[in-house]
Structures are given as C-alpha cells and as structure tokens.
Image: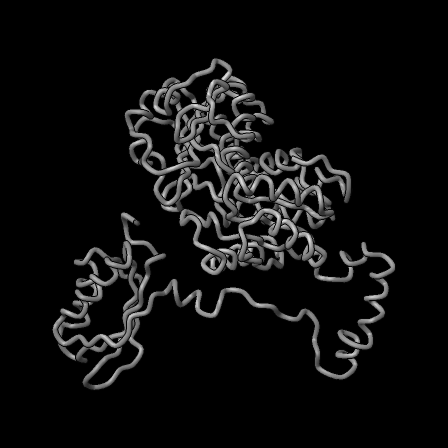
Length: 469
C-alpha cells in the first residue's frame, strides 16, 4: 500500500456544484482534508445555476479514494455524477494495437502488399529463410512470453491477469526502443509445454523475452529454449535486473571509492533475479559474496540444496558462514536485496561497514525502509519511483533487444550483459555522479541507444554460435 498519494491511485470525480456560493472553493479543501492531492480541477460545463466540474486527485489506495469521494460529497450543494479510476481507464480495451506500415489506398497497393505480389516475397524466403529477417516483421519483433506464475509482486495469478502487465511491457519496448513486441500469455505452467509452444511460434519473432515465470522453472525454460532456437532468449526478471544492479553498483562504488573485488557483498534472495545478479557480479570481479534465502546463508553444508542453490554455495561464501541474514550483513560493504519486504531494520544497516551501499529492491515494499537506510548508508537504491536511484529494468531490456535485433544475434552472451551494464553506468557522467544519482532516469534520452550500441558491438554482427550466458 502506498504511504503517500500516488498517481497509480488517481481518480477523476465528475460533480455538479451551485454556480454561486463557496462550493467551488471548498472542493480543493475537501480533497486535502481527506489526505488527497488535487492534480487538476476543470470546469466542463457552465450554466447560470450549476457548474459541472471534473476534480482529479491522487489517493493512497482504493479505500482512501473512496474516503476522498465521501468528503467531496459532504460539501454543501455538491452532487456526484461519476467517479473514474484513471488507471483502469488507461487500460480500457488494452494499451497496444497493430497498425499497417504501408498504405492500402488502391488496387495496386493491395496487390503488392497481399496477393498476388506477396507470393514472390514468400517464395524468396522459402529459398532462403534468412531473408525473413530482412523482408518481414521478424527483424523488429519480440514475443513477451509468460505463464502468469510470478507476476510483479502479485504471485501466481494466471495468464489472463498477467496480460495487462505484458501489454505494458510491449508498450515500453515500443516507447524506448522502437521495437514491436507482443504479449504471449500461456495457459500452462508445464515446462515441456512452455518450451514447445515458444519453439513453434519462434519463426515469427526476432527475439523471445521471458517474463514473470517463477523459479526454478524459469531456469530450465530459458536454458532449453536457448539450445533450441536461433534467436535471442532473454529472461528479463533475471538478466535485465542483473544489468541494472551491476550498472548502479559500479557507480555506487565509485561514489564511496571502493573496488568491486575488495568489497563484501551480502545478498538477500536466491531466486531468478538473485541468481542472475550474483552471476553477473562475479563476472564483473566480485570475490566476497554471501547469499541468503529465507532459511539463512547458502553454504555447502546445507542439506536442502537444489542445483541452483548448489551452484551458489560452490561459488560464494568461501568461509562457510551458516547464520542468518542479519549476521551476514554485519560488516558488509554492500547489501543487495531482491527478496521480501521488511526483513532488515535501520540498526542492521548501521552494523554494516563505513560508507555502505544498500540496494533494497523488493517492490513496492523494500527489504528495509529507505528512510532508515539513508540514515546509516552512503548510497541507497530501491525499485521505487518515489526515491532517488530507482533500479528499473526498463533501463536495460529495450536497449538490449535493440542491439540484439540490429546485430541479428542468435543468442545472448555474458559479455553482452557486461557490455550493457558498462554502457548504462557510463550514461551517468563524472560530473553528475553522486549518492543520489548513480543510475540514469528511465527517460534519459541516451539510455537505450547507449545500451543498444554496446550490445551490438559485443555481438560483432555474428548471428550464430554464441556461448550462452
């Protein structure tokens, strides 16, 4: 639940008030007295006796929105006509659409775009399948694939409920990288069915973005699809998060004048995101890392290790620490949380090393209160938009896929991920770098282009034979 009014709980109240008197001036006061924030007040119809007004305001949650409406209705002379939830209005009928890139104004144009002219293009592709990248939407199209099992912080809510999120992801692809993406929401959580389904639809796409598929199933889905397909397969919950974390940490360590290979890093979360973040940090030079899950530190002596946890145990925690997260945080230079809300306190952050770096990325409720963390840490980042240093995957995946598609890449390498993180970090200039600016805004005009260029250069224009990340 939001603690302050948020545009995500924005409403517009259409009401009538008497044309004379104090009712109009009381509307803003009524909203503010209920704890809301007025963002617009528009007179939509005026008469001698009545005024019709749209009052737009931000609330904390749905109950708070209703309380604001009740307060408005209590103003003398006010008649409520309609209350609209602006978020639901934005989603009404979906957020994306397909448009033709070519005009179809006459018979000639129809004959070239469709039959009989299109047959020549189809036969050219039949002779050389690679021409599909040049002559069809394949060159610029990504499938956003989910099984609805791990949607945002909402959990296993199913494919229909996942569709608004996947639509949003497709809209972000278009907005930030000019990529045409389409939601593919699968009504199965069986690994074999997911893999086979994606395999058979792959010819129509230049890349596959796996999204919101729960761990550990997501690891096998990605691994098998990378083996089967000749187009890039990228699980954004893993690799997009890892790129953003590495970029932000690179700059945070510059702020506190510490080196990656020297710092002690404690991580909370050993799922999809945690696993990918860990692997990329190790590839970037991190040496001293302890990963904790809900049972405590991951170490070789635990008897509950699956393949993923076993890999973590073999590549981290060299001293075999077997305690809990709070103990692992003591003396650490860096905390990276991709886990659960409220698992640490300000006192835990105070026990970290001098000039500590805290990335509390659980969303919307971080692992530790950002305000409490800022009292003790030199640099704090979250996944939220209402604090500085937001770690947001939209900083990575549009540029990554833009580079992959432009290079006609057949896969994704760890070198590409490192290159993307380095380029993202470099968008923040030395003059701009500081405790409250270690990662650029998602609206920074240079982000997608810089990441795309780095990935494209790393790909080297090769289309096959990549070593998988």
